[in-house]
Image (tube, rainbow, N blue to C red):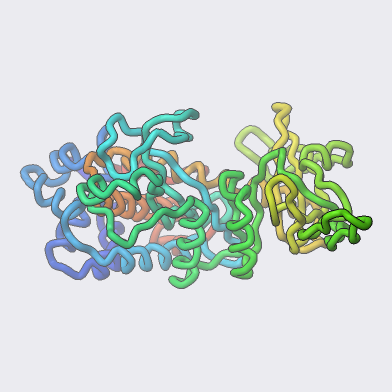
Length: 414
């Protein structure tokens, strides 16, 4: 297959730090073949059809590279973070936490279970990957993909052994996985100003507290039924009951909590345009108020948390209303909060393109190692597309996106 020489030379230069991190001579040899197999056109990006396109007669070598060879994955991930920082990192960058699902027909692939599948919009057999993307403006780069392991897999020693799940892997919720990945990214030098996540993560008090404890600014989705208090709420032990009554052992709040949707219902909503889209200005109506979230104590009688945060409502033109929390400072204007609420949608682009163009969900192996190796190669390939999108080496890969979507090798002359 004829490939534009300029593209291949630029790819070789760009990929060299990753090859250096691989170390081993054979891994350095086969990694570029695997990456080109992901980048070049083709309906399936599983090993056999990729080998037929980029390395005929060497299917076993590609399989060994991705599924059997022991890499120092952390070393390649560190290079990916460094590349992402140069392209989109900075104080005005955003770290988007989300997850993406890979539908599967059988039940033998590592971590597959009957769970919610966003791609299908329903409960289905799938693998769920926790995803973190570094983004600046309209340019995202996925820098972390970690498999969520349902409890049924954690408890099944036979399936764990068969799939090569490391012995140290214990059950962790998706928010717990995300916090661990944030720690890794920060340790590897990732630079960003805010963290954004949908209600699947924002509804977790542990996740929100974890971000605050790390000194991070965050804006996250919540459910409309999330209960909150006003900032003037007081918490104290109730007065001693009349003689003969049983004393209360737990403190109580001075006011009753109210659901987010009810608290904002009578507020003043303001129309705000957060950016221009391909079909014109993008706008919605927003309202915000400072609150303390009902998140401590018993679920039946939750007490307010210690932190004051913004409760933000968003009324879309479709009639749908969404709710969010943010620990941005009290003086933050609504015109600043609104774009933060909308910014996390940028992560939909890498998920879609890694699946449709780069074959994220095409891997047919069943092992823990093979899946994570394939996912990492997919992230590296996508980062290279973003490098091209930003002008590539000849234009210094500036931080300003020039196109609404990344160039693929097909459009680069493949």
